[in-house]
Image (cartoon, rainbow, N blue to C red):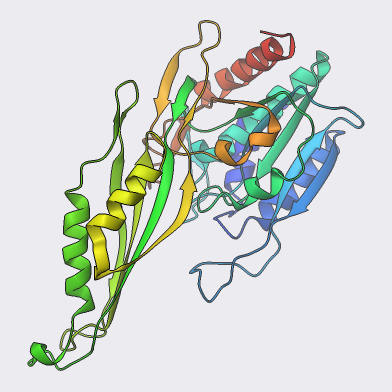
Length: 346
């Protein structure tokens, strides 16, 4: 019986797999793919330190790899198991599936499994790789890259509206931390405000010119998190901000600019650096530029990368996440056609 990607998407969406809590979804995929006659491997991915990482779990999480026994795949279909919080389950109407992960990326998992079922029946040597941690630090991809399976091509799945991405932006995560001296707020001259230092540094960082790539667009910068201080009537002795820069080229220029702009007002830590990636056009497939970052930079050992998937990135990470059922079914055909072309030497 053919795999129903719509039903499979609903089953996956109804399992909470927010980052660091992917274990139950991994177990489901391991058992499901084993029942589909694949040889299935699970590779443990360490949990981060709970003291330093808010939201870190204490249960097992692992990547899942599946292929027919004894084959070296020509093409591997891959995406991520984890989702951003908060978890909410599935619902549907005639046109759409709704719920966390419907487009990013559990609908893609379902489409890839359905496509792989058709590909193996047609004789294409195909593998499936589903990793954890993409939404935070690509920890699963880093682990997977240590044990490649000899594939020539990696088709990574992210919401691209079923268009082939010609490039995806990189990601530079920056953490600024300032130190001060506590005092009574009525006597600010006796203290040294860490928050004031941070605010001034962030103001200047926001004013920095960022690199632009004519065919791709500009780098973008988002201050996503600010924390600090003790109370309104206390001069703050500590503060921090977390920034994410979407890169359109090498990170070195942006790093130098941030360090020069911040100066000695804050300690600067570059905690994640995923490079900008260009990819090729194939046949007459519609194309796009992905302003977001994927696991592709951390899966270099798995073959030439391509990026394609159903769903819109504009609704990913939102309370209105959804995917059109028609688009999900179309993605199965696209994965089959693209993987077949690659396996046959296009």
